[in-house]
Each structure stands twice: as structure tokens, then as C-alpha cells.
Image 1 (cartoon, rainbow, N blue to C red):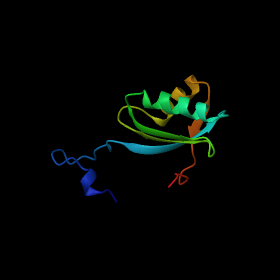
Image 2 (image 1 turned 45 degrees about the horizontal axis):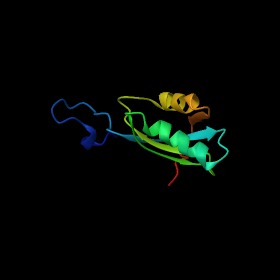
Image 3 (image 1 turned 30 degrees about the vertical axis):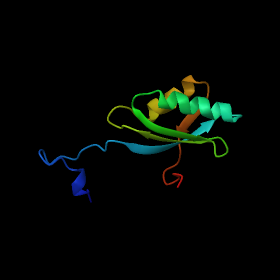
Image 4 (image 1 turned 90 degrees about the vertical axis):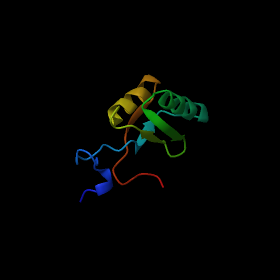
Length: 95
């Protein structure tokens, strides 16, 4: 069931959340500099509110604005920096 707090009080329609969190699996990182570079590339995008890249887990946790970008676009940003990223399996989000 929809949460009534997600509805626009004027239109009654569901509002898109301001930000959502996605977890990406990242391949090709070999050191902390790789992880830092990916984090920097993600954070340079104005649609990204936050990014943490974990070298050991080969994961990136990204907070982004879904109305302005997509997980596919986030993966493209990572790919442009020389690494491969894809959406982590659902329910696998780091705590």
C-alpha cells in the first residue's frame, strides 16, 4: 500500500522521492585509488547526493535523485572512468 506521505497534497498523485539509495557492484578496482576515483566521478554528477565506494566489497552505495538520473546512467559514469558497474541484486543493500 502507498504511504500517504508520498502523495502530493495538492494533486493527490504520488511524488517521486527526492533521493533514493542504490547499490552497485563494481568490477576492475585494484586499490583504494580506484575506489576514490569512482567515488569522485559519481559525486561530480549533480544528480548524485552521496557516494561511498568499498574496495573490499567491490560495491558502491549511491544516493541519487531518481527524477533526474537512473541506475543505468550511474553505471555509465563508472564505465567512463574505466570500470564496470551494474545494479547489485535486490535485497543486497549494505546496512
